[in-house]
Amino acid sequence: MRVRVYFCKEPEAGQRIGRQALDTIYDLVWESELKNVITIGRIWLRFQDEAMPFGRALKDGRPHEKIAPGDVIQAGDEYFMVMQVGVKKVELKEG
Image: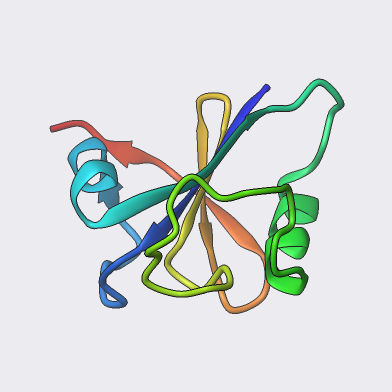
């Protein structure tokens, strides 16, 4: 399963995001193909607690160092918004 983590550049991005927003207000900071089944909660915990949770990041000039509310985790075709505690599944708007 391909997993991507996007950090939000704008803290007031809101709960609804579109595909275009992933290119404009979000930075792709990590991407990997995971062979073992892993839950989104475990990915969130790793980014919450560790400085380099899965190795080197794709981008060094990130808007923040640790995962924060408003950031997005993509697992396959599903997208999850990081909340204060945990993650919430979100639908991407087309266009």
